[in-house]
Structure formats: C-alpha cells, structure tokens
Image (cartoon, rainbow, N blue to C red; front, side, top):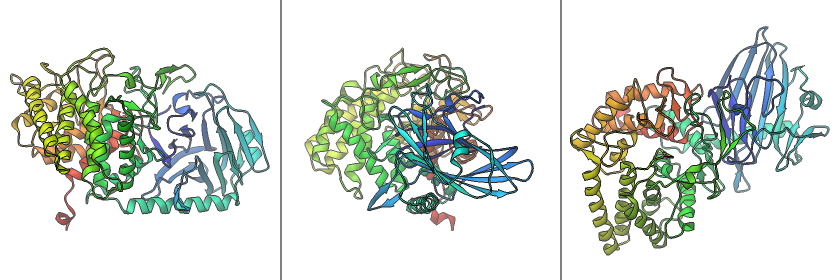
Length: 595
C-alpha cells in the first residue's frame, strides 16, 4: 500500500519520488507539471501488470534503509534479504556547474552495487504516458533501451544486462552497474565513468550550495534538509516555485479533497521569499522574484489570478483523469486547478509583499526601480478596491464567498509596503497617499473583523469563527506582539482549533464537510505566534513534535492526522518546509548564546 514515506530527488528541472524500497513512483517529465511518466503513486493496487514505476527489487527482501548523502539531494537505499544478501542503490538527478552554467538534464542516475552475499535482483522499468493510459513501445540497442512516447522518448543507457532489464529477468548481482535514464541522446563517454562523474559533481554542487546557507544554531540538519527540498521545488528556467510535486494526494481519506499542486500560488510568495532571505539563498530568491515580476509585468491594469503555471501559463483548466485510480484508490485524480479562476483578493497584497524585497535588498543584481513601482501601484489600486469585498479566501472555498479577514489584512499590507517603497525613492506625495489609504484600511478592518464580545479577531467580517490565517496578523505587521487583541486571538485559536499538538486551519463545515486533518503550516504559524507572545517553551515543545512528524528523510506533506501522525495531502509541501525553516529561525538560540 502506498504511503508518503517518500524521498525526493531532482535538479530544478524535474522532480521524482522514491519509496523506501527504491521504487520510483512519481516523476512528471520533462517538467513538474507535465505528464507523470512514473505515476504508480496514484495507481498502485498491487497488480504485477501495472506500469508507471521503476524499481530494483531484491529477492527475499526483509528490510531496507534509506538516507541522503550529507547535505545533498543524493539518495541512498539499502536493501537486505533473508539470507545475507544486500544491495545499495544510489539515486540522483545530475546538477552541477559546467561551461559557466548549471547542467541539469532531464535525467536520473541509478548506481547499483552488491554489498554482501549473492543478492538476486530484478529491474523493472515501466514508464507510462497520458496519465497512465498506456505503456510505450520499446526499441533496443547493444547498451540501451528506448521508450517511445508521443511527446517524449526516454533512453535507458546501462552497462548492466540489457536483456535482463528489458525482460525483467531476475539475476545475481555480482558487479556494480549504472543506469542512466534520460533524453534520447547517446553518451559520449562510458556509462560507468559518466555515472561516477555525475555523482561526484552533483555531491560537490550540493555541498557548495549548502555551505553558503545562513542557518540557526539549533536544528541545523532539519533546516538544511528543508532548504534543499525548497530548492528542489523550484523550476530554475523561470524561477517558479511549485506548491508540491504531486497532484491528487487526498487531504484526508476518501474526502475528494484531491487537488493538483504542481503550480505556483501567489499567496505563497511572501513566505517563500521570507524563508529564502533568511537562508541567504539569494540566487534562488532572485529567480523567484523575477518570476513574480514577470507576472506583474504581464498583468493588465494590475489584474492577477491566484495561481500560474511554471512558465507563466494562465489557463490551468481543471479536469478529472479517469486513467488513474488515485492514491490508495481514493480518486478522483485531477490535473489543472480551478483556483486559477477564483476570486482571491489576498493575491494583490501578496505580490507586493514579495516584490518589496527587490527595493531593499542590496544583494540583488536587478533591484526594484520606479518602473516596477508603477506596476505595483496598479496592483495596489486593486488592494484598495477589493480589501472589503467577498472572495474565496486563502482556503479557496469553491461555493461560498465572504469578506475574509486574511484577504483584507494582506491587501492592507500591500498598501502599507507601497508607502514604504515610495519613501525609499523620495516620492513623498505617493508615500503620503499610500500611508493615508493604509491607515484608513487598518481602522475599517479592525472595526469589522474584531469581535469584541468574543475578544478575538474572526475569520470574516462580522463572523464568529476563527481560522489559522489570523495568526499571520503579526507576521504581516498588522498588529504588534504586545497588542492584547493578538494575544487573545492566539488564545482563541488554540482553544478552538488545536487538537493535541496540531492545528486545524478551521473547524466549520466547508464545501466538502468538516475538515478531518490538521494543516501543517497552521501549526507552524501557531508555534511562531506563541513564541512572539512570550510562550517560547510551549512553542519549542510543539516545534520539536512537528520535527518528529516528518517522514524518515525529513519531509512533510500538507496535512497530518493529529491522532495517528500519518501524513496526508500533496507532497512534499513547500509551505510545510517553509514552516520548518521559519520556526527554527525564530526559536533557535543565537550562535552567540550557544557558546
């Protein structure tokens, strides 16, 4: 049965997910939002005839070990059988500097070697296409197999036994061998040399990248793993950072809350930029800011949509895929996301918040200028127009609209930042204009969103419920940590949304009923809020618990069962990994305090 004990490999061009037994169960090729050539994660019902996976199985296997090479995206899986046989599989996507640029081919390398005994293995390479609808025809050469699909042809080059791989024949592994799966291009050097070179160069790249991260004194390994995962979620060609690698992993069993997260949400932009800035991952941050700037520049009169494709696609029409049964058979499987059509008013403030970094960060090669400021002012006018209008909100409710407090606050934050940007340019008249508007919005929001009888802010104007997004009012600068209204709101959220050591995003019924699972990023927001109001010991305990909830290689999905601790929702979730980074940065003792 499938689960989310998965490890991610990738190179900022594509990503793949490998289970604890070394099976590649998910990879969209050539890029994140394309056809899942390896799709058994959403179609694994135990039938031998199925396809959409790539595994190297050990006969008689009884256990496995899996871990990453230190501070890299290079994965090692060790398989052990019941009579002393063992094999090691090293998986990675090549990524390193070559010819003054980053070499990141659509390719994965699998290095297989015996460790002990006489291990008998079987290699099954079964790609699929058109969302699992068909398996491709093959052709073979002396040292390769070609898998010919309508939109892509893959070549498996190897110094292993080609016939055994093609026919899935078990054989005794006596010597190491290499498999390179990638574009239909011949290698220019021996396969074993290419594999070793790619491995050494890729390890060196990740060591170098990790070496320049700014990390807290405490939880260094956890933050570095989260940072590498965040990097692997970036599409370097455009700068986009996707919400997750997968589609349709349900938020809860049989809930139909199955969404396609292989896109870039504007609501995430500020928090992703914030995490990258804290890490000192300047190049990745700048690429992402360029992606956001492209969206702003391509908008008409400041009009934006909540989500875009990795190459700025606007039309992400949502449809159901009938050819895949779904995670554990829990369909539907969806491609595309209807959210691109939603009215979500917070997106306008979100892009201004993200773009603000370009005006105040001297490290950036292309700082914000007056031309970008004028584009942002058009977006700011949308903040003014929509901050007091109903929308689908942060949680993307599909059948109801309210004036959501979070959307209003993010719109206010966008206007507030425009005033500060204008001041940095010495444009005093524009700074005054935006400051006056921000101050007026602030008063209106407090009047309508604070319930004095309940002594808490509420999730929508005039409402009585709370939700997790209210925890961001401090982070966005709307309230201070000493404001009693923020402390009482945190208290109300803990009372109503906390379940054990986890937080629901809300507990009222939505389009699909009452939420069953806790929302990981909300738990991190709660941790940060507790720390800010002086409850650092409680925050510390909750953070340590969240770290224990990560899977065996340190990754998190979107949701978690607060009782069993099982991970649910799309994976690995960028928002959740950002939560690890931001909370660790806030809670850790300083390097000076440590010594």
